[in-house]
Length: 195
Picture 1: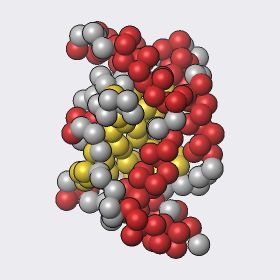
Picture 2 (picture 1 turned 90 degrees about the vertical axis):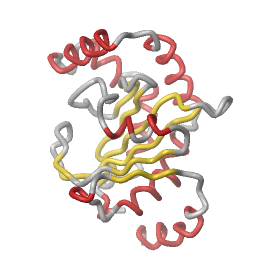
Picture 3 (picture 1 turned 135 degrees about the vertical axis):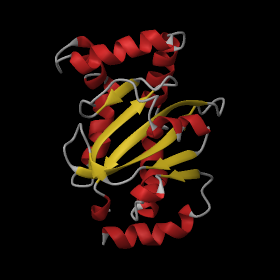
Picture 4 (picture 1 turned 90 degrees about the horizontal axis):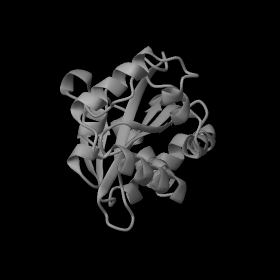
């Protein structure tokens, strides 16, 4: 029944104003259409909520002037940290992360992880710890936020380091509703065969 719902909604999604980039042919993800539809029809509402926009704006004001050296130092600190250390705990235990856990729990068995990055590609919120703090050097951020408003990136299927499951990742740019400017990105780990 769930797949029928998504197939029915595919007609409506065809008119959505998104630019999609996919993983290379070597990692082709034949679930990309379902993953794109899930982003467009479900996840878009999550990142349009005030709790999301306010959290991303606030972090962009704090991290906007960080140098690459400072970002790399933060990423190194994250990789060496325990989940209870402030650098990780502050990302996992904030109202936006709680909101994302509540939203994604409705899709238990489909969504494995959700994390949001700021304009620099640094984690703002996450449902589970990520393997690193800085996503800005990865395709999930570069091919969504880096491509501007409306961009979607669908990654290949692989065993994810942070979740330990065979999944796909789908990412999209988050834009400020007042200006239309990109302010961050969201990545959702999914078991697409469950969509």
